[in-house]
Amino acid sequence: MFYLEKALKEKKLLGFSLWPLGKVLAVTYAVLMIGASIGGGNMFQSNQTFMQFELIEPAFVGHGAWVGMALAIIVGVVIIGGIKSIAKVTEKVVPIMAGIYVLAALVVIGVHYTEIPAVFGIIIDGAFNADALKGGFLGVLIVGFQRASFSNEAGVGSATIAHSAVKTDEPISEGFVALVEPVIDTVLICTMTALVIVFTGYYTPELANGMSGSQLTSAAFGSVISWFPYILAFAIMLFAISTMITWAYYGLNSFKFLFGGLFKKFNLSQKTLNYTFFFIFLSFTVIGAAAELGAVVAFADMMILTMAFPNIIGLLILAPEVYGDLKIYIAKLKSGEIKKFED
Image (cartoon, rainbow, N blue to C red):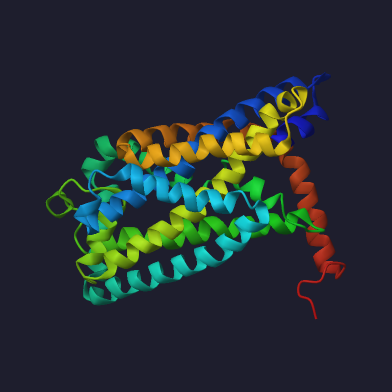
């Protein structure tokens, strides 16, 4: 929202300033970001955590609000500590969670290694057979875009808020760091998940038995590693917490952008603004755990997908400048002005 407002202020089209467009896009983006942080970055995470605990322990059934309250307390303690506190938690939690998950997926695939050719045949046939091409291909493609944007946020612009907080002499280098994220969470983690579900046969309605989300993934893993659903519940909780505290930071920055001036006008402190947003955010953590998955996913999808439009408009307008900066950065690398590695 900051780049949309400030950068487009300097741009002109047919002699007219693009500042009004930038302002509209920035405000629109900030509003959608708050919705996305509450929906996809918060309610969905608490919902999936509760569903997994509900699956492995029947005593949790019907007690989603209590799980949501526990998550809200944990997340609240971290986000009140600020960006440094968030970084310290996520840099430890995410690699551990990802490592455990990938290792377990490799075990499942290894157990079914003789079925590798058949599995890839199923995937290709499901995507390109006559029935898919006639009626379902477009629908599946749309769902694929929804899940991909939800997973890696490519084009959505949300991760920019985290990357903009780093200390670097070369902003372009941070762009290269950002490119790694979709590779890890979508190309690696999501592909592993899909393969586990297909290898174990849980993509079929008979085995899926109406399950979805984390419960379906858990059942697929559990069919090979009987005790893994318990480990997965812990991993999902870690993933949910790390995602929630990150999106709380995103949402807070958007909240500041929209209402910072209003709070100042009434002589309210920055801390009051922060706590106001955190109260709203954490309230929805509890609601998300108690809500139906379908409603949560529909709201999250709408917010996250819609966020991409103001961002992509800004990206298209500013693409020549970014390309120019990239050429300068590469030239500095080639000349040795920027060292690739420190001695």
